[in-house]
Image (cartoon, helix red, strand yellow):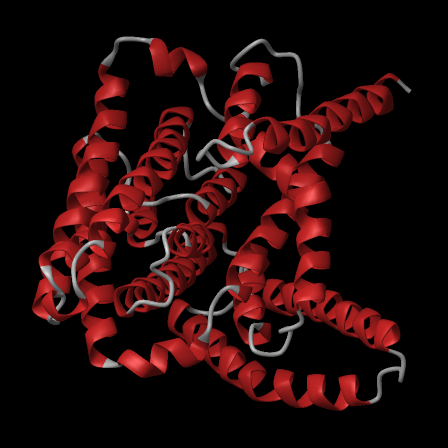
Length: 395
């Protein structure tokens, strides 16, 4: 009973924080996820040691990571990618490849293994579709050409980083009996097959839904949840981590689950119950002592943060200029690409599960996420105000 009481009290505290924090900081610019990370660090085993994660809390955190990546996938609009073609590909590749090399080299210089360094480089590729989308919408850039280009490039980078993450985890954990090339082929073929089958099945299923509007909404919601679970089970069976499977299914359903009411219900389920626990559990991995201690590990943290920001901003600016954007527009791309939240934290969660990250690396990556998620939207807001003051014919 003591264990059950501890779990209920912990979940009550976490969900209570998830309820109170967004209301208290409603007029602030900081995402509530940052504060949940901080509270997780303070109350977790490396802080006051008030809460310890048991199997139930870990399971809630797992479901939170799944919902988070699924909803990030729902933000992806495949039609947007088709409009830009080569220019978007140039921006995404350069803004991913350069940071990948920087992250890899920094990690190797501090004595990490090649696999861990590859994973850090993979994290450097990613950004955060959800946060970038929210920031662009809040600053009025979402429907501008640069806004659509930024979001499209972010989608490509997040997708590539998650697929690479899946390959690294499969190689490390040995969750699949297939050779890495065979595994890659199966993964790609599975995505293509689902891209064809999911819309077909969804159309047939939803056409048979109830005549009442409420029944139709409920049927669509059940279909989305069942599709998510089936996708997670199938991809897990071939060695793909559930967070990758969730993102893929979110992308495939993004053009199907278009109802705002359905998305609101999914948001309520995810952010009302599971996602706050995920952020809190990830925050519990932060070693508070390393944050304030003066030792060489802090140099690694500083190198990680500075390395990502410089590599992302410079590669984003240069690639933006190459494809014809103005200096300010290219800078907007560079700054917005530095955000590290959803994909980064999901990768940290998955890496910890298979023992790829130690406490120092975990703390450094989470601090990177906290710093960039706070700073990038603020800078983007300032740059957006300058952008709006420039006449369209001078852009």
